[in-house]
Length: 162
Ligand code: THU
Image 1 (cartoon, protein in one colour):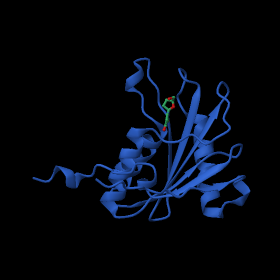
Image 2 (cartoon, helix red, strand yellow; image 1 turned 90 degrees about the vertical axis):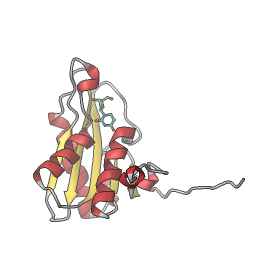
Image 3 (tube, helix red, strand yellow; image 1 turned 45 degrees about the vertical axis):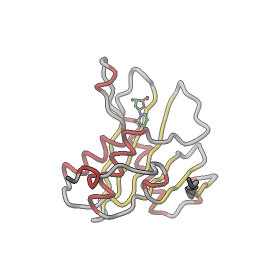
């Protein structure tokens, strides 16, 4: 038996003003995308913005449904939009922000497990690590380089090979 220790690196910033302009622009787009979320049930508006390798930015937000599991998170709305409209173009970074009148937000919201799995799929497809930027203008901001930091021991398509 041996014990394997994994380490992750998280950069933390106290304010959006400390970010590079590329990171700040992406986070501001995610923050803006919160305004058009459809989240009447949770009142937890999430916005996500994806930076593509061709420089374009696409955004999305959470879309809820009266049948709760039918809704979709902001991250997946944004990534699926990116893949649907820009197939073959790698995703370089994703920013995720939350706006809510009912939930107090001191810390950045962290992507759910399903969204992490989708990030892993596109990283693997494009052989490009995703820069993951979490936070808002009113919280501290966390930046991680690559999905392995959020989803270690990831399941990839290679696992399906016969
Ligand atoms: N949500 C996201 O959009 N992204 C996440 O990573 C976590 C949760 C949404 C789903 C639902 O609409 C609301 O936040 C409350 O869970």
